[in-house]
Each structure stands twice: as C-alpha cells, then as structure tokens.
Picture 1 (cartoon, rainbow, N blue to C red):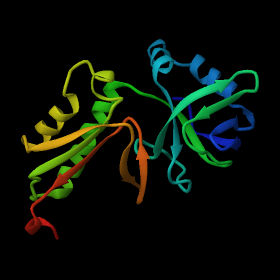
Picture 2 (tube, rainbow, N blue to C red; picture 1 turned 135 degrees about the vertical axis):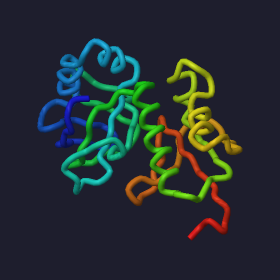
Picture 3 (cartoon, helix red, strand yellow; picture 1 turned 90 degrees about the vertical axis):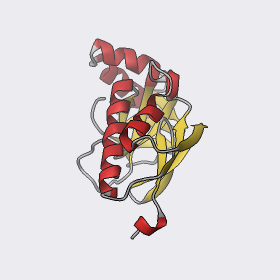
Picture 4 (cartoon, one colour; picture 1 turned 45 degrees about the horizontal axis):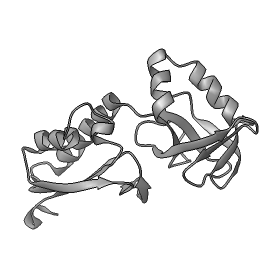
Amino acid sequence: IGRPLMVTDAERNVIKTLGNRSAFEVLQEIVSELSEEDQRLASTALLTGVVIDEYKTDFDQGDFLIRNLIGGDPERGYLVINDHISLGQTMQFQVRDANTAEEELSILLNHHLARLGIKKPVAAAVFNCNGRGLKLFPERNHDIEMIQTATGGIPSAGFFCAGEIDPVGGQTFIHGFTSSIGLFVPKQDVE
C-alpha cells in the first residue's frame, strides 16, 4: 500500500522517519487514503516490506522482505518492526490478504514447475507460516490443495512454522507469512 519510502532515521528496529517525516504520520496518511476494504485489512494485518535489492528502482512482488509492524509511538512518531532496519533502506507498507496470497502462490508454483520442464517432481516438502491456513484462508488445507492440484497430487509432507527459511534474490532469509516449498525430482532428471 502507498509507495516505496526511504528510511531517513532509524535505530535497530525503530523507524523514526520516512522521507524526513514522522514515520507514524506517514503511515496514518497512507492508511487514510486507502479504500474501505484496504483500511479493514490494514487494521488487522499491517506489515512492512523492506526492499531486498537496493539497486532496483522499480519494485514488484518478490522484491520485499516482509516484516511485522509490531508497534508505534504516536507521541514520538516512531514505528517498530520485528527486524533491524538501516538508514537509507527502502520500505513499503503491506497488507496481508487471502486473494493476493493465493494468486502469488499460484504464479510461483506455475513458474517453478515450468522451469522444471519435462522433469516431474516426485515429492514436496511444505513449510507454511502459522499465519496462513485458517488464519488467512476460509477453508482448511488451502495451500496444500493448491500444491496438489499444480503438481498432480505428488506425496507431500511438512508443517506450520513461525519463520520459514528460503532464498530470495540469491540471499537466504527467515520469512514470515510465507509458504516455503521444496520440490524433489529424481536424481537422473537433475542436470
């Protein structure tokens, strides 16, 4: 939501200013301009996305490392996230919503299955954030059913996590609110 913003003052996990303005006031302004539906999402699932590759100028899905917004101090104008953030980093506020999560999972599954080409996965390991499942989707087994449909019903095992480890942009991070999936292909199919 909103636009990418530069962190202009921060200390550890406290964001003091964004674009040389009070971080709290910037957030209030962004939320006030949202649609009623997005304001509802922001009231229950407001997050921050920290840009992974600071050399990029245009950002899209997958360019942000999602972090929890865990508090704020309206008097000082500060916001607090659950990770260190540095002066000069770029961030953008995010909301968590089931439709976008489903769309992104579908896109990523199809992308990675297409990359395998004729190599068919024979199993999957699935590590889902405990913030997914019924906390995000209205039905049980949402993500695993999507994986089963996309892969033709391969055997899958996994569990819910409170932090998922996965690479993005050549670096490995601990994620939140994600589904990290490992697809296994037979050894003879690996080049």
